Image 1 (cartoon, rainbow, N blue to C red):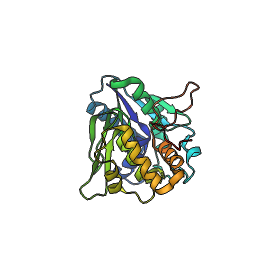
Image 2 (image 1 turned 45 degrees about the vertical axis):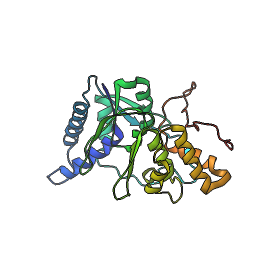
Image 3 (image 1 turned 90 degrees about the horizontal axis):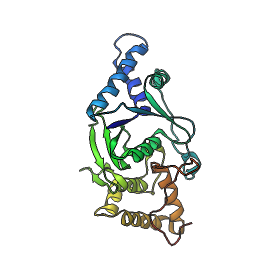
Image 4 (image 1 turned 30 degrees about the horizontal axis):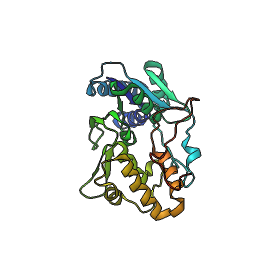
Length: 265
Protein backbone atom coordinates (compact mmCIF):
# COMPACT_ATOMS: atom_id res chain seq x y z
CA UNK A 1 0.00 0.00 0.00
CA UNK A 2 1.35 3.41 -0.99
CA UNK A 3 0.42 6.34 1.29
CA UNK A 4 -0.59 9.57 -0.46
CA UNK A 5 -0.18 12.16 2.30
CA UNK A 6 -1.74 15.61 2.40
CA UNK A 7 1.21 17.84 3.30
CA UNK A 8 -0.85 21.05 3.27
CA UNK A 9 -2.64 19.80 6.37
CA UNK A 10 0.58 18.70 8.06
CA UNK A 11 2.33 22.06 7.65
CA UNK A 12 -0.42 23.74 9.65
CA UNK A 13 -0.99 20.98 12.20
CA UNK A 14 2.66 20.38 13.00
CA UNK A 15 3.61 24.04 12.84
CA UNK A 16 0.96 25.08 15.36
CA UNK A 17 1.58 21.97 17.49
CA UNK A 18 5.26 22.88 17.75
CA UNK A 19 4.35 26.34 18.98
CA UNK A 20 1.86 24.97 21.52
CA UNK A 21 4.19 22.23 22.76
CA UNK A 22 7.39 24.24 23.12
CA UNK A 23 7.97 24.70 26.86
CA UNK A 24 10.67 27.37 26.74
CA UNK A 25 10.42 31.04 25.90
CA UNK A 26 10.49 32.25 22.34
CA UNK A 27 9.87 30.51 19.05
CA UNK A 28 10.49 26.74 18.98
CA UNK A 29 13.64 25.79 17.07
CA UNK A 30 13.08 24.22 13.67
CA UNK A 31 14.61 20.90 14.79
CA UNK A 32 11.71 20.55 17.21
CA UNK A 33 9.15 21.00 14.41
CA UNK A 34 11.18 18.81 12.04
CA UNK A 35 11.16 15.90 14.47
CA UNK A 36 7.41 16.29 14.92
CA UNK A 37 6.61 16.12 11.20
CA UNK A 38 8.95 13.14 10.68
CA UNK A 39 7.20 11.33 13.53
CA UNK A 40 3.74 12.21 12.19
CA UNK A 41 4.59 10.88 8.72
CA UNK A 42 6.07 7.69 10.19
CA UNK A 43 2.95 7.13 12.33
CA UNK A 44 0.64 7.61 9.34
CA UNK A 45 2.61 5.07 7.33
CA UNK A 46 2.43 2.59 10.22
CA UNK A 47 -1.32 3.01 10.68
CA UNK A 48 -2.07 2.28 7.01
CA UNK A 49 0.35 -0.62 6.75
CA UNK A 50 2.50 1.08 4.14
CA UNK A 51 4.46 -1.29 1.92
CA UNK A 52 5.91 1.52 -0.21
CA UNK A 53 7.45 4.90 0.66
CA UNK A 54 4.91 7.71 0.92
CA UNK A 55 4.38 10.50 -1.57
CA UNK A 56 3.58 13.88 -0.05
CA UNK A 57 1.37 16.33 -1.91
CA UNK A 58 1.72 20.12 -1.76
CA UNK A 59 -0.47 22.81 -3.30
CA UNK A 60 1.41 25.02 -5.74
CA UNK A 61 0.38 28.07 -7.73
CA UNK A 62 -3.14 28.68 -9.01
CA UNK A 63 -6.52 27.03 -8.58
CA UNK A 64 -9.07 26.61 -11.37
CA UNK A 65 -11.88 27.08 -8.84
CA UNK A 66 -11.16 30.80 -8.53
CA UNK A 67 -12.46 31.28 -12.07
CA UNK A 68 -15.51 29.03 -11.54
CA UNK A 69 -16.82 30.68 -8.38
CA UNK A 70 -19.32 33.40 -9.33
CA UNK A 71 -21.78 33.56 -6.45
CA UNK A 72 -19.06 33.91 -3.83
CA UNK A 73 -15.24 34.03 -4.11
CA UNK A 74 -13.65 30.64 -3.46
CA UNK A 75 -11.80 30.31 -0.13
CA UNK A 76 -12.59 33.88 0.80
CA UNK A 77 -11.00 33.74 4.24
CA UNK A 78 -7.81 34.89 5.99
CA UNK A 79 -4.95 32.45 6.41
CA UNK A 80 -2.90 32.41 9.59
CA UNK A 81 0.26 30.37 9.07
CA UNK A 82 2.49 29.00 11.86
CA UNK A 83 6.03 30.34 12.20
CA UNK A 84 7.70 27.27 10.67
CA UNK A 85 5.18 26.80 7.84
CA UNK A 86 7.60 27.59 5.03
CA UNK A 87 10.50 25.87 6.77
CA UNK A 88 8.47 22.66 7.03
CA UNK A 89 7.49 22.92 3.37
CA UNK A 90 11.12 23.33 2.29
CA UNK A 91 12.19 20.41 4.49
CA UNK A 92 9.52 18.05 3.16
CA UNK A 93 10.36 18.93 -0.43
CA UNK A 94 14.04 18.15 0.24
CA UNK A 95 13.62 14.95 2.25
CA UNK A 96 10.56 13.17 0.84
CA UNK A 97 9.09 12.19 -2.50
CA UNK A 98 6.75 15.11 -3.21
CA UNK A 99 4.26 16.18 -5.86
CA UNK A 100 3.37 19.85 -6.25
CA UNK A 101 0.09 20.80 -7.90
CA UNK A 102 -0.18 23.56 -10.48
CA UNK A 103 -3.52 25.17 -11.29
CA UNK A 104 -5.33 22.93 -8.82
CA UNK A 105 -5.16 21.89 -5.18
CA UNK A 106 -3.00 19.15 -3.75
CA UNK A 107 -6.31 17.43 -2.95
CA UNK A 108 -7.05 17.14 -6.67
CA UNK A 109 -3.61 15.73 -7.38
CA UNK A 110 -4.12 13.13 -4.64
CA UNK A 111 -7.50 12.15 -6.09
CA UNK A 112 -5.97 11.80 -9.56
CA UNK A 113 -3.15 9.62 -8.24
CA UNK A 114 -5.50 7.46 -6.18
CA UNK A 115 -7.67 6.91 -9.24
CA UNK A 116 -4.62 6.01 -11.33
CA UNK A 117 -3.15 3.57 -8.80
CA UNK A 118 -6.44 1.95 -7.81
CA UNK A 119 -6.44 -0.24 -4.71
CA UNK A 120 -2.67 -0.05 -4.21
CA UNK A 121 -2.79 3.51 -2.78
CA UNK A 122 -4.44 5.19 0.20
CA UNK A 123 -5.21 8.87 0.64
CA UNK A 124 -4.07 10.10 4.06
CA UNK A 125 -5.58 13.42 5.13
CA UNK A 126 -7.66 15.17 7.75
CA UNK A 127 -9.61 16.93 4.99
CA UNK A 128 -13.12 15.44 4.80
CA UNK A 129 -13.56 16.56 1.17
CA UNK A 130 -11.37 13.71 -0.06
CA UNK A 131 -13.75 11.15 1.44
CA UNK A 132 -15.84 11.53 -1.72
CA UNK A 133 -13.09 9.83 -3.78
CA UNK A 134 -13.45 6.04 -4.31
CA UNK A 135 -10.61 3.97 -2.88
CA UNK A 136 -8.82 3.68 0.43
CA UNK A 137 -8.69 6.65 2.81
CA UNK A 138 -7.34 7.31 6.29
CA UNK A 139 -7.63 10.30 8.64
CA UNK A 140 -5.42 10.38 11.71
CA UNK A 141 -6.62 11.37 15.18
CA UNK A 142 -6.19 15.00 16.18
CA UNK A 143 -7.23 16.25 19.60
CA UNK A 144 -10.90 15.47 20.16
CA UNK A 145 -11.35 14.48 16.52
CA UNK A 146 -11.17 10.68 16.15
CA UNK A 147 -9.33 8.81 13.44
CA UNK A 148 -11.20 7.59 10.37
CA UNK A 149 -10.36 4.36 8.62
CA UNK A 150 -8.52 2.98 6.88
CA UNK A 151 -11.78 2.62 4.94
CA UNK A 152 -12.43 1.49 1.39
CA UNK A 153 -14.83 4.02 -0.17
CA UNK A 154 -17.14 2.72 -2.89
CA UNK A 155 -18.38 5.04 -5.67
CA UNK A 156 -21.88 5.54 -4.21
CA UNK A 157 -20.72 5.85 -0.60
CA UNK A 158 -22.92 6.58 2.38
CA UNK A 159 -24.30 9.35 4.61
CA UNK A 160 -24.63 9.68 8.38
CA UNK A 161 -26.43 12.32 10.39
CA UNK A 162 -25.37 12.94 13.99
CA UNK A 163 -27.94 12.40 16.72
CA UNK A 164 -28.26 16.13 17.34
CA UNK A 165 -28.79 16.74 13.61
CA UNK A 166 -25.96 19.25 13.43
CA UNK A 167 -23.33 17.26 11.55
CA UNK A 168 -23.58 15.39 8.27
CA UNK A 169 -20.72 13.08 7.37
CA UNK A 170 -20.21 10.47 4.73
CA UNK A 171 -18.26 9.09 1.80
CA UNK A 172 -18.43 8.72 -1.96
CA UNK A 173 -20.81 10.43 -4.35
CA UNK A 174 -23.57 10.70 -1.74
CA UNK A 175 -21.28 12.83 0.40
CA UNK A 176 -20.45 14.97 -2.64
CA UNK A 177 -24.17 15.45 -3.32
CA UNK A 178 -24.73 16.38 0.31
CA UNK A 179 -22.00 19.01 0.01
CA UNK A 180 -23.73 20.40 -3.09
CA UNK A 181 -26.76 20.95 -0.86
CA UNK A 182 -25.16 22.21 2.34
CA UNK A 183 -22.14 23.90 0.81
CA UNK A 184 -18.75 24.05 2.51
CA UNK A 185 -18.19 27.14 4.69
CA UNK A 186 -14.49 26.31 5.15
CA UNK A 187 -13.92 26.81 1.42
CA UNK A 188 -16.58 29.54 1.06
CA UNK A 189 -18.82 27.35 -1.10
CA UNK A 190 -22.43 28.43 -0.36
CA UNK A 191 -24.35 25.40 -1.66
CA UNK A 192 -28.15 25.60 -1.76
CA UNK A 193 -29.56 28.48 0.31
CA UNK A 194 -31.18 27.48 3.63
CA UNK A 195 -30.25 23.81 3.23
CA UNK A 196 -28.68 22.47 6.40
CA UNK A 197 -27.56 19.02 7.43
CA UNK A 198 -31.01 17.65 8.31
CA UNK A 199 -32.65 18.85 5.09
CA UNK A 200 -29.79 17.51 2.96
CA UNK A 201 -29.95 14.14 4.72
CA UNK A 202 -33.71 13.93 4.21
CA UNK A 203 -33.34 14.71 0.50
CA UNK A 204 -30.80 11.92 -0.02
CA UNK A 205 -32.00 9.37 2.55
CA UNK A 206 -32.63 5.95 1.03
CA UNK A 207 -30.85 6.79 -2.22
CA UNK A 208 -29.08 3.73 -3.63
CA UNK A 209 -28.17 4.99 -7.09
CA UNK A 210 -25.86 7.81 -8.24
CA UNK A 211 -28.26 9.03 -10.93
CA UNK A 212 -31.20 9.03 -8.55
CA UNK A 213 -29.18 11.05 -6.05
CA UNK A 214 -28.37 13.59 -8.73
CA UNK A 215 -32.05 13.92 -9.68
CA UNK A 216 -32.93 14.61 -6.04
CA UNK A 217 -30.29 17.33 -5.74
CA UNK A 218 -31.27 18.91 -9.05
CA UNK A 219 -34.94 18.93 -8.01
CA UNK A 220 -33.99 20.73 -4.79
CA UNK A 221 -32.07 23.33 -6.82
CA UNK A 222 -35.00 23.77 -9.20
CA UNK A 223 -37.23 24.48 -6.23
CA UNK A 224 -35.03 27.47 -5.39
CA UNK A 225 -33.61 28.66 -8.72
CA UNK A 226 -36.17 27.49 -11.28
CA UNK A 227 -34.76 27.68 -14.83
CA UNK A 228 -31.35 28.76 -13.47
CA UNK A 229 -30.97 25.61 -11.37
CA UNK A 230 -28.68 23.74 -13.78
CA UNK A 231 -26.16 26.57 -13.95
CA UNK A 232 -26.19 27.07 -10.18
CA UNK A 233 -25.72 23.36 -9.47
CA UNK A 234 -22.96 23.03 -12.05
CA UNK A 235 -21.02 25.85 -10.40
CA UNK A 236 -21.37 24.44 -6.90
CA UNK A 237 -20.57 20.90 -8.02
CA UNK A 238 -17.42 21.94 -9.88
CA UNK A 239 -16.19 23.82 -6.81
CA UNK A 240 -16.74 20.80 -4.56
CA UNK A 241 -15.77 17.92 -6.86
CA UNK A 242 -12.31 16.44 -6.34
CA UNK A 243 -10.80 16.07 -9.83
CA UNK A 244 -10.15 12.43 -10.80
CA UNK A 245 -8.44 12.85 -14.16
CA UNK A 246 -7.02 15.34 -16.64
CA UNK A 247 -7.98 16.03 -20.22
CA UNK A 248 -5.60 15.10 -23.04
CA UNK A 249 -4.17 18.62 -23.05
CA UNK A 250 -3.39 18.40 -19.33
CA UNK A 251 -6.24 20.65 -18.22
CA UNK A 252 -8.53 19.71 -15.36
CA UNK A 253 -11.47 17.49 -16.27
CA UNK A 254 -14.37 19.28 -14.60
CA UNK A 255 -17.40 17.61 -13.07
CA UNK A 256 -20.31 17.07 -15.46
CA UNK A 257 -23.87 16.01 -14.74
CA UNK A 258 -24.06 12.18 -14.74
CA UNK A 259 -27.23 12.26 -16.84
CA UNK A 260 -28.72 14.63 -19.40
CA UNK A 261 -31.17 17.23 -18.13
CA UNK A 262 -33.81 19.06 -20.09
CA UNK A 263 -32.32 22.48 -19.41
CA UNK A 264 -28.64 21.62 -19.34
CA UNK A 265 -26.44 24.11 -21.20
